[in-house]
Figure 1: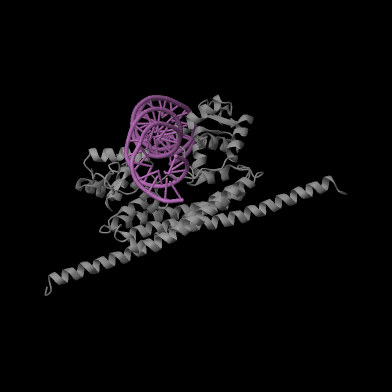
Figure 2 (figure 1 turned 60 degrees about the vertical axis):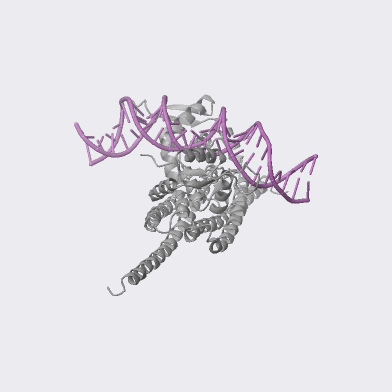
Length: 201
Length: 201
DNA sequence: CTGTCCATGTAAAAAGTTACATGATTTA
DNA sequence: TAAATCATGTAACTTTTTACATGGACAG
């Protein structure tokens, strides 16, 4: 049997920490996972309806305001908890990564060094910001005990992101250094070629 | 405009290094990228036909044997090279990662520590093997000059995998250590509870 | 009274995997 | 001669994104 679709279970997992709306689920995922998971509304809203039909979540009516009828929050049910436990017990499937930057680097032409250099510089900026954000979040983890019943595990997941970001930052720096050397060597080659063509100029 | 579908361009990129069959494209991708890119036949064969229709590749007839008519190899055309150059010049799109292991860890219940521990142990084994493989490949890179006109860039891409694997290995070890401490603390709590219930047993 | 954020939702397209059918060639 | 590997291909399905429509709440 094929591994179960993750989206509904991730939703159930978040609802275990407290009721949320579809919008809130997306916001919470974006915030708390700091990049190791993402869902689009095109997955969340249909999944919520399917969970509702299956009796795994229930509607809680309006969210915070008095007259606001628009915001619908959902809570997990006992059936939902059971389904979540079963999913959590299954071993995670391996991701098949597709790294656009790496494959372009692998396929790039050495005569055009500036493009890869710019991409790696961008990546360095993004990963540096991500690392800072992860460190701030790690500092907040102990205080968010009430929201997340399992803060140590959250912390482990964030630490993975930290390790990855650090590794990527180091790689960016080393690769930029190597590219700079390649650029210099190319400039020297071009200069030497120019001298041979115009020896007394 | 949306970013172009990567598959046909990755195929063109590989064909720049020499003619390949559909099967060979898959094998070469699996081997050379060591995990940062993957394609299934369900993408490769349709993409090859579409590239053929667009005049970006041409068929080379039988591959190696005498009477073998079954193996069809493809070569890149001038039009294909131009399309590839245009794609390579576009900045790579950011991947949106979905890490099944991390999201399960984040959502897991602290009362069941053994499952996550087993998953992380598996990951540690896989990443250790991957790191060894990447190091062997890095050692081979200088000798494969003839196949890949751009070995330095290939080496950079492999180095990224190495850095990631090392970071993941370190995280696995630290997390396994932390989980072991949690297990011990839990065992002590359970033992203390048992003593309180059966004080003179 | 305008722009931004909050919020829900759908339809269609795109992207990707899986399972299967088929058969040649090589190796043990 | 059996098993493994090489090899091509398709159809169905699943998964995911994107673009769009819609409108309330709120801040400046």
